[in-house]
Image 1 (cartoon, helix red, strand yellow):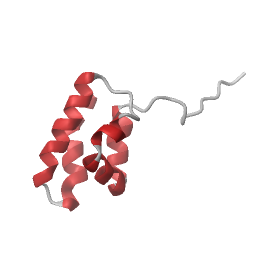
Image 2 (tube, one colour; image 1 turned 135 degrees about the vertical axis):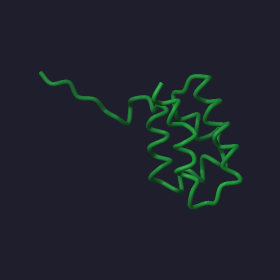
Image 3 (cartoon, one colour; image 1 turned 90 degrees about the vertical axis):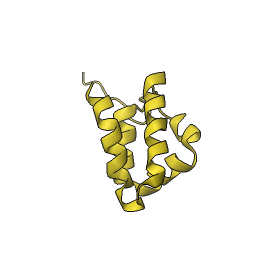
Length: 81
């Protein structure tokens, strides 16, 4: 019997957050405006959470068209380890 998973019920993790920020500029803008509210929807460790917040703080000086790439670059090492 195959096992079926409801992906909406599965916890969101850091890779999903990064992926969504890369393809959804509105999501990235929401993340920058209200990081606590957005991050509450993701199951992140304390280290992952602080890494995301640090990356977001660095985006303030980045041009809007380059923010998704800059955010990914800041976090990609964290996901790979």
